[in-house]
View 1 (cartoon, one colour):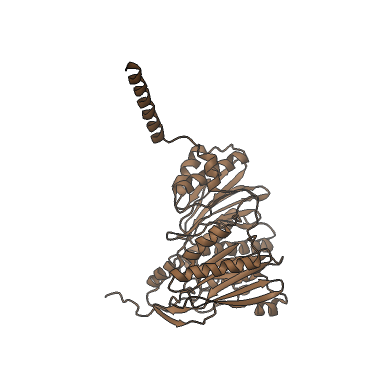
View 2 (cartoon, rainbow over the protein chains, first blue to last red):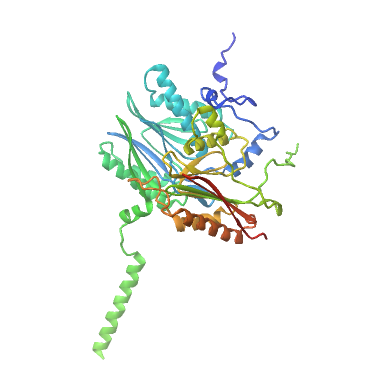
Length: 284
Length: 198
């Protein structure tokens, strides 16, 4: 019995043939491959040059009124901050958002490619693509480039016929459906704030405030996150940007200006010494 | 079998720095003209600034706008994702409304519209200075604030000259001569300034 192995055929690009920009976007784009015996070693060196922005904090969660998506805006190359104003929330189309973590160029290029594919699906099928479908398209593309050094950790958030949808997709080929995700070096801090404050029955303002706080606290403790905290809401009519605040300004809003413990101790000791001196003077 | 190390790398760092600043109705782009390899100087007179719009004009029958060119450059770089061009670019021009626009890139095509930018060996020296002088509000803030600098054209050109004079002092790969290109509604203007040659 001949086994059907068509499912294993990869959609990876062919070596050498580079197609026109317009024609090539309908199929998977083809890439020049370096003529070397040690592809992995070469990629490792090339990655040093590319230096993807792994330092980041992005988060998204589903609640009663839809999906809330938030991210910081810092890009770092090693220890150097290459930009404080990176757009990490990518607008795929008017009702779907993608977040960026990992290689900035990888995320930008493949999200744009996904947006084109979604539009083609709309034109071919006379209806919008679902979040499930869009995330699957992206996951399949990334899986076909698995092992080649792409670095993408993204969340696809949108509102389709079945309601709000949220998927996590990464360049290892993983794709997870969920209600609450945070991706990046600052994600542990964001999860702490997000998990402790989350309720399904929140209003849009409350959810936005929770998302903003989570990003702020992550930027406070994680050196690789910072810049501007952007918050987006995806509702039945598509996405809307709710706020973009510099985290330096958010600090004065969220971190109460109380004297530190040490300062209180010093002030307490000084007060005691003054009282002692007064007592001695009275006795004398 | 012992893993063989490659003896030859297709990449070479030729050093140098470039800067671009976007203004309300102009754009200033500047780069030094030194080309080096290791400790050698290959030439003192290498222009790092080029004009690109003619092919698009023929194909699309209209002037190529800066944002369109920005996307084209990004795609060109990303198509070499697995064998990258070793190039950190800065693209400058005027957008459809005549406002200055500057786009900054990494080696594989990730790009961002900014009010000013510098790349190259001297960028770590020049960028903090530009942040101090020109710090523009982030384009991500809501309500949106204008990212272009309020400086006049001649002030921006002077600022660029100051940047390079300082960078030349502390970066061995930057020097010789500075080429400045100014784009505005009247067209393109080129200017040169001598820098330290040591």
